[in-house]
Amino acid sequence: MRCCYGCTVQGISRGAGDLASGYRFLSAHPRLWVWVIAPALVTLVLLVAAIAGVLALASPLVDWVTGWMPASIERWAGVVVWLVVVAALGFAAALLFATVAGVVAGPFNELLSAAVEAQLTGVPAPRFSLLGFARDALIGLLHGLRRLLVFVLGAVALFALSFIPVVGTIAAMAIGFWLAARGAAYDCYDAVLARRNLTYQAKQAFLARHRGRTFGLGAAVAGLLLVPGVNLVALGLGATGATLAVHELDDAARPPV
Image 1: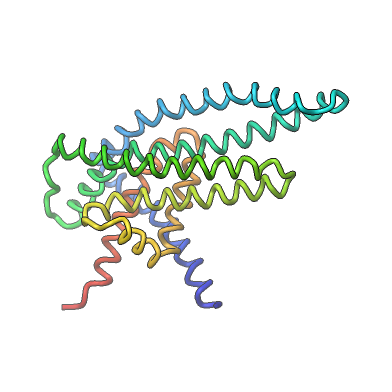
Image 2: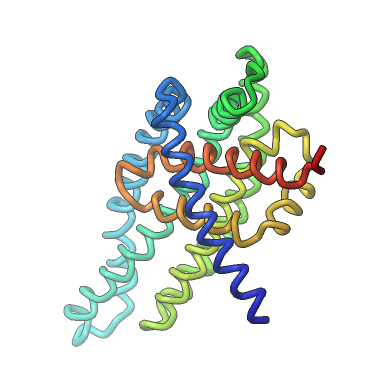
């Protein structure tokens, strides 16, 4: 048990280090930033929409909740409800943002991953195909809609849990971050694993075999997704780090000559 715990902690640490490796690699090959900046511009529009949505929903929701309270406590309780509602809606918007950003960045991250592997191996990346890009975007959208449905159901449960004072709010945020980290890990590694023609089950099996390392990268990316500005490029950095990690793991799994 102690060894497994130590391996898990070490794996999470290495996963977080993969994100830093991705940044260093992009810094060394600045032309690759184009595949990071392009989806970031689209994501920026979505981020502004998410913030506007939180502000628009918060006030009527607070009014509805406080409307059920006795008049004697409505005034001071309204402040507490406002804080809880804004925190819950803001966190839900952040999780939704992570899901939608993954859908937007997916096709770009595959092109980025191919360019990274071309630099690592010296083998030219496949030529850009608009038809292939559109196909990958459509596939990513379909997968994203499925994940979005799961997210909505989970967000409703987490929102209800957050109304339990202190413990419920902390638990909801912890569970939400864990789900966001897993989702971010899949989005980042999918950029490289999808090009290996792996099935969804095979991708999940890969993430499970390297649970600590992949979760560490996902947690680091999920954390960056909460940082304004940096969240626009977080998935691109993560996809680069995941590509470097898979390339390293492939070399480690290859028998010596």
